[in-house]
Image 1 (tube, rainbow, N blue to C red):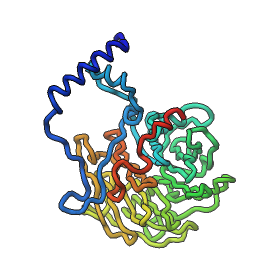
Image 2 (image 1 turned 30 degrees about the vertical axis):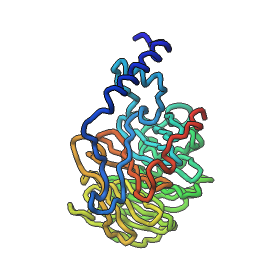
Image 3 (image 1 turned 90 degrees about the vertical axis):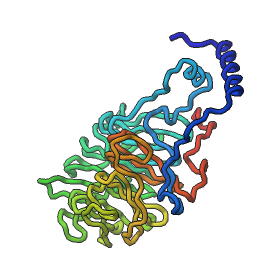
Image 4 (image 1 turned 60 degrees about the vertical axis):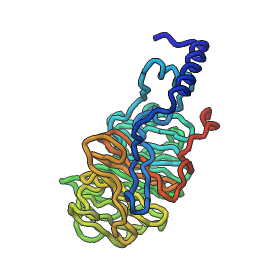
Length: 365
């Protein structure tokens, strides 16, 4: 299709502008975005936006946008195939994709996108769990390689941790904020007894100790899914096969747990991703419920966000998996079925504030 020249674009732009002035603004029903909890209760989270493809972050030039409007072409981008986990550092959203065998980097602040783990020494096979340290270093748990690959914030490969013989089915991980300790969740399997968390020294790569063994008692794990570190320094583990969250000290001492199997609010059916906010509240994704539930530090349910639905839409999920909480308290939820990341803004954060705001000065970096 031939491109329109500058003169044509300028002329048609003026015509469109005059037409808009003459006809007035379009009328019609404005879609209300989901709020949690809904009115009349006081709002705690607002659905803000979704990341589905590169078009959701890459900034379109005015000329390209006008040409697309005139030709009736729908804007498209490169979409995810099967996203699994998410992690965020200062407006840069990292999403693992198990089918495309890479990590997507959606840089909302800079309005750009790039791929991680597709070439060089850090090629990925089946990336799953993700986490970042305070410097933005990215740790990727590869389920097929049975290792953790480390990249800097810009996706440059640095090193790998762990020996494949150490793991059965590594799926999730979390790193201490200072980047010195790495906690890797080994889900194990039906025939495996290695349902545990392995703790590594990031600098030396040495395996320091393991946390838990397979079982149902306090401090034991069955098909663990994911883990995170709270501001209290404790380790929060999704104990999927036991339908609970267990809390350990950083040294591996069992502290407490909450949750049980069930179909009611506050219970678990297929818990997966987990996060802890600055107030100590615990966020847990449940794939079967199609939502994430928020608990206080004592395990009492505070709020459920989202709903299970076979039709795509804001805060609608079919196969939610990963979850992350950024520096501003925004919550990011991955849905594998709808191939998206939904983002929720806390009511305490004013609209248009925080790290998830486009900054034109960063575009050229």
